[in-house]
Length: 147
Image (cartoon, rainbow, N blue to C red; front, side, top):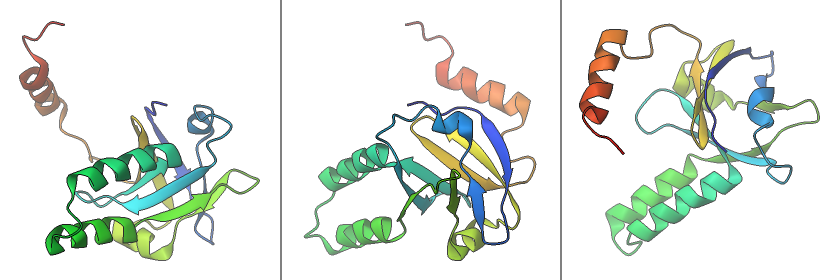
């Protein structure tokens, strides 16, 4: 699965939103469970298909020493911020109020495909790097490399 692109959607009065059909089409039939959590860097939410979430947790688990109090606290907080969900028969899911508040979401969202996960942002403009700065950043990151 590789999610790309951005899709705008509206929430209903209960906080439900349609999971974008273009993203649903990328999922295998067996992938019907998801995890929703706060992003650790930005005011957005992140949706993981369960298989991607399990891989993410496994990486974190192997890097942490749960006998170290600080690392145990990191693991606890990372997992406690996560909520599992399934889509309803109409392809919708509920965004919990506490997560809506965290991300500043009120009535509309933008889904942004981010490889094996999807970010959910409050619908607003200018969340990306300015075009000239983006070009310079990509050049600095990839310039001169040929593979």
